[in-house]
Image (cartoon, rainbow, N blue to C red):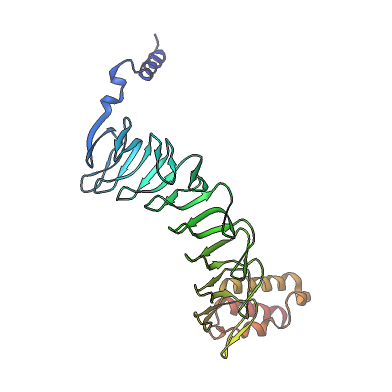
Length: 325
C-alpha cells in the first residue's frame, strides 16, 4: 500500500471517529469561566491579563444564565457572559431569538444586540438580522435595526436603518418618501432626526426652503431647537439680521430666539467654485464669459475672510490675471 492510500485511510478513520485519538476529547480543556466550567477546544482559548478567560470555542453546547451557548463564547473581564451563538430559541416579550443567532449581552445579563442570517420580527418591526447588529434597550425593546420592510411611524415612512427612543417614538431613519413635518419637506432617502417629543430635530430639505424668512439650500441638512426655532442652515441667499450679514453659501447659526450667532463659509464649496472657474478659463480661453461672469473677481474679494488671502485664492487669482489681464 503506498503512502497516499495510508493518508486517505487515516483521514476517513478520523472523520467517522473510530479511534479515540481522533476525538476532540484529547484536545479539550475544562476551565473556569465565571461561575461555570467550560469545555473548550485546546488552542482556541484566550485570557485577560488578570487570568480570567476571555473566550474560546466550545466542544459542545453549554448553559450559562439559562442561555444555551454553542460554538464560540466570550466573557467580560469579571467573568460575566459577553457573547455567544445560542443553540436554542430564546422567547422574550418583544421577540424570539432564533437558534444559531449571535447574541451580545450587557454586563448585567440583558441582551444588547443580535446578529442572525435572515429576517427577524421585533415588536411590529421586520428587520434584517444580517445587515448590521440589531441593538436593543436593556428591557428588550428595539433600539436600532435595518428594516426589511418599509414602516410608517406617525406620518414618517422609514426605510433602511431606523432608530427608536425607549418610549418607542422614532429617533431617526432614512426616509422612504418626501415627508413634511413642522413645515419642512424633508427629502427622500435622506436621514430625518426627531426629538423624543416627535418634533423635527434635523433633515435635508427636498428643495430650497424658506424658514422664518431665511432661504435654506437643500445641499445640507437644517437643524432645529425643540421649540421649533431654526438652529442651523446652509444659506441659499444673503441674509441680514440686526445689521449682521451672512452671505449666500454660508452656514448660519442662530440661538433659540432667532438671533444670528455666527456665519461660516463653506470652504468645500469655495474650493469647488474656484477650481471650476479656473479650469473653465483655461479650457475656454477669453470666451469663457458665459461661465466666468465679469464680477467673479469682485465677489471673491468681498468674501468675509479675504484678508487671510489663502494660498488657494491667491493662486487662482494670479493664474487668472496671467491668462487674461
